[in-house]
Image (cartoon, rainbow, N blue to C red; front, side, top):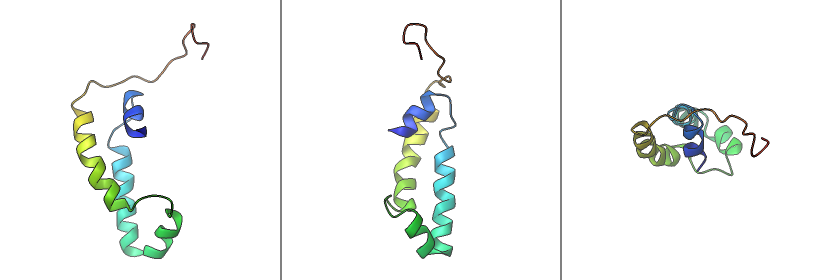
Amino acid sequence: MGDVLAFKAGYDPEGLLRVLVYLQRLETANRRLVRRMMSTHPPAMQRVMFLRPLVARLKRMPRGRPATPSPQTGG
């Protein structure tokens, strides 16, 4: 899952959650616009409910570091 990979790379695990909470507020204010923008994604509320426990688990894990190029892999 992208959230776990982002966390392992050193990103804030709550970042996506904050964006989805914002989208959830937008859905309330302008449901049609947000539905059009996010038509290929589950509703924000559903994603927030899924992410909250995941973020709580990630916050208990050791923090990752941004990836650095490896001489063995060349990238």
